[in-house]
Length: 332
Image 1 (tube, rainbow, N blue to C red):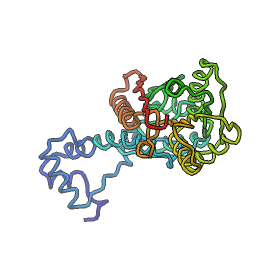
Image 2: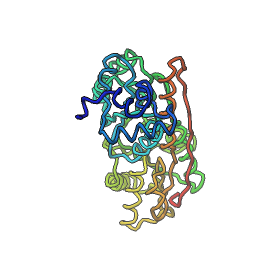
Image 3: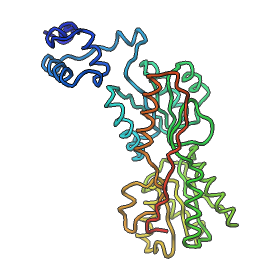
Image 4: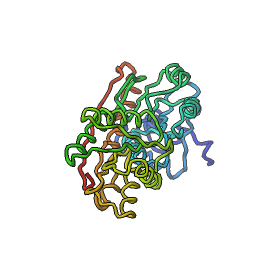
């Protein structure tokens, strides 16, 4: 038999169960007994059956699909978030549709509209600031929405993350107190909202210490190469700088590599701190000081919140702050 001619009743007959049991297994396999599920799975594999979800999508039934929007496929931290999401969705028979918008609000708008066309059951966003049209489409869709990585400002529905401004403030204060630095420069990247929040945290800490706020911003997607170039530029503008606080670990690792190449002693001459606590930064010599953010847990919690609200739309949107940790490393 060819795949498209096989019906649920055919599988039910072969398995010796009802058609309803087959349907339940395809939608929510964890609700079917292990023995029955294994028998159904074996038959489906043997006959190469592929479920057709188009009819239920047309009837506005659940598609068992969630949309995920990330700003960059090149940034490792979003891989960690996706891993956390998949750890939940895969166990509940949900598929994920992932789109990239390159830190562009209008691109995000286009991708949101595209994902909604697939009748997704919910969506996870990596930003909290959207175009008016994006917000209108999301509200009109009446599906659960979770915004991740930030707990500052208004939210569309649910959010899970941490306070970027406070995290930056705490790290800069750590740099000031540990090494008594006087001229710390902020190395930014894209001027996105989270980058700006971190700069605000840096600025508050420096202002409270009576020190000048200095910033180098390339308005580019971050990379290790960019970090090396930025430190070179910063030293040209402020030759007496004694510390850099970087908006992420890519920039910080680039700065550290530039110091190695130029024989600049870290941390004796120059302190370096990053953001996000990537494993590669911890493995560098000296190990990179950074703000450790719980990306996997953020993804996992976001997916749990989303699926819970898909199952019960009476749940009120919530905010979950998972916090952060200051990792001292050896570069302060």
